[in-house]
Length: 293
Image 1 (cartoon, rainbow, N blue to C red):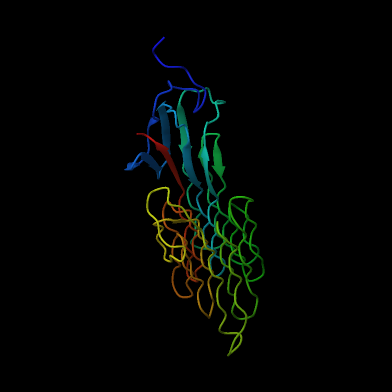
Image 2: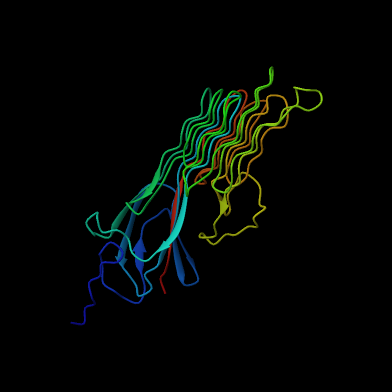
């Protein structure tokens, strides 16, 4: 008929053409033949037309857990990344896909709060990170929160992240475990050194994962609280007398004195454990990429 063929690929909406066309997001960037939509806040991804090359790559990161006061670092938000050739039609096939960005868990005083889930319609849901513990076990989540001085780290979610590290009980210093990340388990709190037990290191926040979907790449040994290409690092544990737990890929560092660092916004990085107050978890993000020319 000359007007294209109705398809049921990406939500069953639009007509098949040579390239995909869509709208939505807080930022839209072009990388050669590819268009990248970044959602730092909740919104809709609207597919106007699906192309002959109907692959769409996504990154979905949940909000991270907050650190526990005096002890465990927050666990990273759950991490999901894949390339798909069709999206579900169960929502009615109207071409509009709701995206919900998860918030980071609270830090401050007491136990760290869990982060909240990030979802890309019914296609993918990443689980919020577990809060770091103040005294007992860290909370389970996308990645688990670090344990307090009487506990172990919380469990991670299979395929999204790893468990937090354990705390260490050695009066009068009680270092906390590091939060788990998308790349590895959080570090356990240190053991006594000279003069014992006053030099007890907090567990290091776990490494996250580096993903170049936004077009920014850094080497795998990149460190720092920002996330140029690193997502879902765990928060560092509080030392209570030794070396504070460091962090990478968006996670906040622990702090023996003063307030611990927050996880970076839109990184899914866990908050650090701190003596006076702990850091909040970083919020999540969704990124979508497809060929547009």
